[in-house]
Image 1 (cartoon, rainbow, N blue to C red):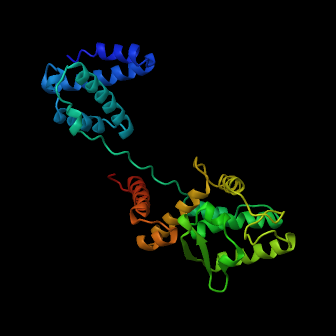
Image 2: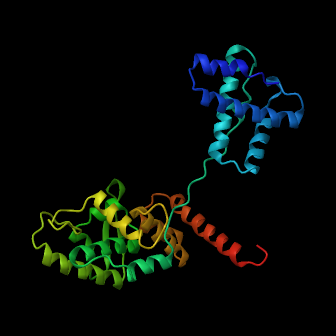
Image 3: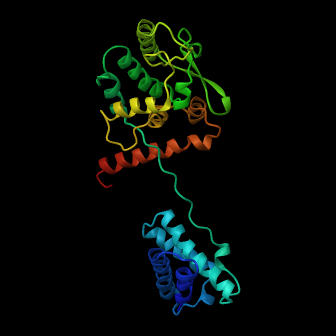
Length: 295
């Protein structure tokens, strides 16, 4: 038996852990003890080795535990063995050779192509200058995949309508060129026409401005995007970054090379861009499970 009572009392009275936290430690140790007894019979700390702990990790993964939960349970076991080492209950720590499962990266949230088409083609963004501007903000994110900070920082000189290219300044002031098509060009032209009429005098060369002529700020753009995405989707995240993910996923779904998407997004490493391949694969799995008769 593990006989963890002295360890739990140590947490309770010397470390002043809450009773709820102590109970969580106790449950983790009891769970491991039950697994160990089923695997090798009567369990004592001296019988526990790295192989047994790894087998426990595999069994937890098979039962569907998330990596965060498994690592928390391992943390409980590590604390227990550190306690035993200090008290002379064991001479070595088997967990030195054990690594917990890596935390799985959350897949990016994105809108489906149909939702974006409905948003840009059918949703009413409002009348006049502000409605035109807000529509262009959403369209610009979707058409270029630029970051929020990059959109806010755009100046008129960054947009070349004749060449259909926008220059953005990304992280660490690295600049890149992003091409765009006729549709976005038309929207930009319409916006400039409204802006020049409503805001003839601007305090700076900012491309996107308020009625006062001042550059937009983060919170304002976030509100504009969230308000309008809410009209077509129920996803919890409705941010400019979701539109960046939507751009990348749409490009990949239409056969763009991963290296090209990397350059358009301004990623330092291809590994960062590869998260979108996992996203599209998850979509493929859903389609397969829904469509295949033997799925």
